[in-house]
Image 1 (cartoon, rainbow, N blue to C red):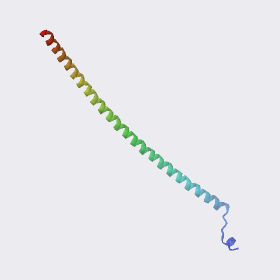
Image 2: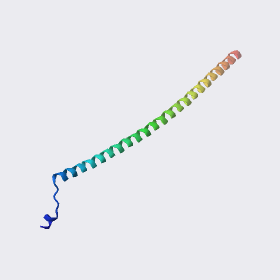
Image 3: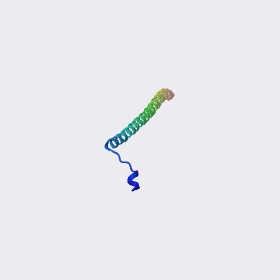
Image 4: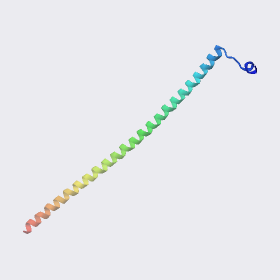
Length: 95
């Protein structure tokens, strides 16, 4: 008997208001989670883009260094060919 006397009964207006409040809080939590997730994706995307820029920059530097090394090697080979031909001419003149 005490239980029946102490419990409160909600009417339809209070139940609808309570459910509306619960849905509103759920909506706010969902919107907050979606905003946080979108912000996190943006940060990760920005970090990936920066890493890609650094990688491209390193690749360009490596390509420039490789081109310089190839040009030096080509110049050295050309010089060796000219020296070799000069030595061959000297050897032919000696014979």
